[in-house]
Length: 338
Image 1: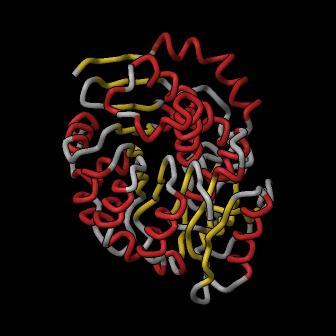
Image 2 (image 1 turned 135 degrees about the horizontal axis):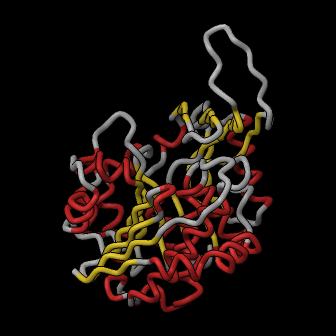
């Protein structure tokens, strides 16, 4: 099976996106979808993998392990990822693939309607065995909808860390359970990403500052929180970094968080390369972390400029954003020692 620079796992979804709506239809009302109804590959590991390839990472360095159903949506997900050249270790289990119907009204956040099915059948041992064979330079997992991998997350991440692979966790609001499954595993997490709503929910705090402190105390090395139009925060045991957002015309924010994570992963591999497993993320200098966060924000912003999760992402678009707005964002960036 060889080696892989990045190994990703988590839930895979067929996204059915209706963007650019003037409003949500009333009961019995029929409205035109002005930008059409598009079906695309979704789920954090799929979106991030595609974004990484579109940014210029060699597809052979990107591997996904996951599950889909034995249906047309499952085949669509596998075939799409393979068309990008991404290594897929995707098992067809059960009759139905995860699906997400996403409605986007202009100027408003997305409305998601989710079916969770095949991702619950992902085997912890399958994930561990793939990691043992591939020895990735970074392991990424999207939690919250992956059945026994969630319930055994502490064990899975410990086995991954034993291989010497840095661990990047991104968690969505859990389906059918509380956030409690996550906390014992955080001591094995090098990098963690969530958004404002998620961190407030998982910590039970009302203020972002308290939520950041509480989550970091659980053992995370480097914590990123995306704040939508307000930018992003990065926190280590040494300092907090706050950056304002890029100014863009938002078409569809569906894939912004995944694109942000892809930006982090891409920039880390560009800066540290093969030495990435040796990097202590707690000791990344503020200037370097500012550069990483800026790039990640630019990738996230690019994702918002087109319908769907990955259509807007390209290195050209990212470079245009950084060139036109990056200097001003870095000038307004705040770094607070802790």
